[in-house]
Each structure stands twice: as C-alpha cells, then as structure tokens.
Image 1: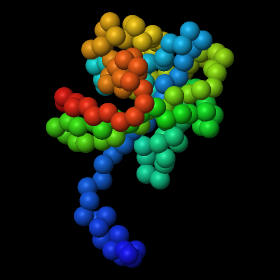
Image 2: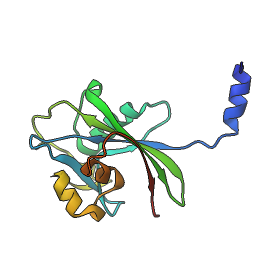
Image 3: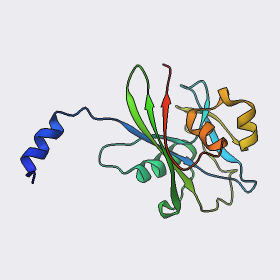
Image 4: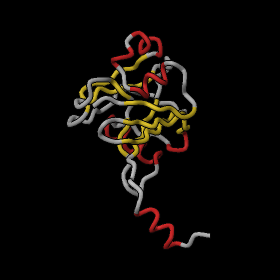
Amino acid sequence: MYNREDIQEFLRTRVARPASAGVVIYNDKKEALVLKANYKPYWSFPGGWIEDNQTPIQAAVRELSEETGILIIPQRLKFLYIINRVSNIMQSYQFIFEYSGMIDDFTSIKLQPEEIDDYKFVSREEVLINLNNYGGAVQIWAKGENIGYFEQTVEC
C-alpha cells in the first residue's frame, strides 16, 4: 500500500503533460463550427488549454465562451475522443466533446479578437475534400472516427 508521501514523491519525478479541450457544436444542418485562430494555419474546433484545477469539460465550456461568446450547458457535453499529440516541442492530450444541446441563434457569435479571425460551419464532406485546411481533431471527426483514443504527430 502506498502512503501519501510515497505518492507525492513519485509525482515529483514525473513530467507534467499539458492538455486541451475542444467542442464540436452543430448548427441545424449538422455542420460543425470551426474557428480560424490567427496563430494557426488551419481551422479547428473551439477550444484551448485546460487550466490548473480545471476539468476538461470546464475548459471546453470556458474556451467556447471566450472564443465565440456561446454559452452552453456543461451536462450536455458528451466525450467523443482523446488525441495523444506528439511534436518536437511537447506531448499533450486533446479532449474532444460534442454538444448535444441546441443553439438557437448563431448570429450573435462574438469572436475573441486577439485570437480568432473567423468562423464557419463545415460538413464532414467539405472537410474531407480539403483535409490539410483543418486540424487533426476536425479531420478525425470528418472521417467519422469519433469514438476512442487516437495518436497524432504534429509538425512544429
């Protein structure tokens, strides 16, 4: 049996792995909302880094609100998949959730000007035609591989 001190000592020897969370949210045509961040060369789902003492769902709700002004009910988020992302800079996890609630009005989207340049709604077919224009999480969604665990190598 490990005691508290043994566990804390073990944890001090580990490298922390950052994580992010994203949200797939649909319009009435079942097209997904994607954002064009000014620091990325591709479109991605709303989302961002999970802050200390925050759950992935809390981060997904916060990031969606910060980036678009859209407020959602956390209990309506369903886990879709997690991506183990590896690059020459770091290794991180990306949690992807799907929102099962309805958003009545997307005309009031208010983009976060310091990070987000544009938004649009895309079908799976549109993404599949131009895969290189979309981040890995969007590509997985478009291919219908929406449940489980995936690994991705990211070039930086």
